Image (cartoon, rainbow, N blue to C red):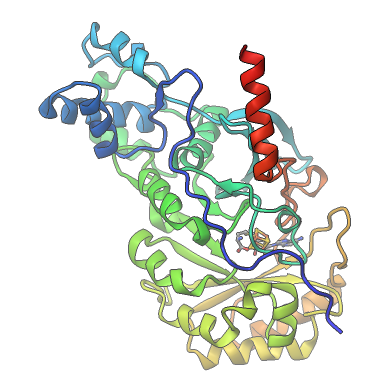
Length: 411
Ligand code: SAH
Ligand code: SF4
């Protein structure tokens, strides 16, 4: 008999757009030009001023990585303290930074309301990939995933999502140098592409299910892709989903990034067990949604992630069935075989390397590319599926008690 899988499969709505700050100022991080403009208007600027200033602010914040208003040389000197009084340009706080023996870096981050989440940077010879989180915890309980043992604490805001990219650029020292007015804008934009930069790609593969925080993830990625700011191309961004079928089309239409799907099994029985969202959106529906994904083509294939679990999903027959399914739906797809990364209390083992190789060969002979991923950052628990933080969802009663204590402490 199957063991019952604890936890809920349905998304728990935890609406949150902005994390309130104790000092009462508004954090501009993660906001688009028009949102910055609206804040300026509500602080008293007229519409025309607000529009101009929001454009300047956007450029300083996301293109230059500036965090203090006083460095914004094209904004009038007397206006800078006015901004400073009302706004901040925030970053997530760093609780801990670790470096793996293979160069992978992991940061434990904290939000303004003290929730903790993780972010990972994976340097390679020809690229540098930042793996960012979309939620603190996860509603889903994929049985091979460490994050899945946490409950969902809350969604990350657009600011907390974009903030990860900003922080990585800070840490890598990758902001354009020099005064803005000394640079020819076009030349500057060109130097801001992949060439010579460490951070070239982003994957939404950290903690959480990004499609269960759709609006915030979309708004964050819009900021990240904006040509006036961080300017990362949608071709260099990949969003990974466990299979939230109803939102996949919107992901293609409204965000337009590459799609990765955590498939991990080819039969209903096994996928129901290891990726429980399968009980809600089954394999056929999922593969049909992949076939319909806007923008997928042979040049832009969908990636299927497949974690290799010993004696669970790694047989030769599984490999052949995988080929049959992908071909049956006519999918432009590639498969990433991920050796299972262990974590404390996990009930699975990684498949034998020979079996992974056999599996890869069978899929490859079926005409589908199926490279075996080299695990990165295992020694610091930074590899796929190893992210977890100490944040816990509090009950209403606990929250009330904490609020009372805080009140009492404030006297
Ligand atoms: N929630 C999204 C994003 C997380 S991406 C999703 O599930 O797709 C992280 C990838 O690592 C997913 O494909 C996930 O299934 C996989 N993964 C989770 N735990 C793992 C583990 N212990 N070893 C290897 N891969 C794992
Ligand atoms: Fe959540 Fe993805 Fe982990 Fe599944 S694999 S529990 S969806 S983070």
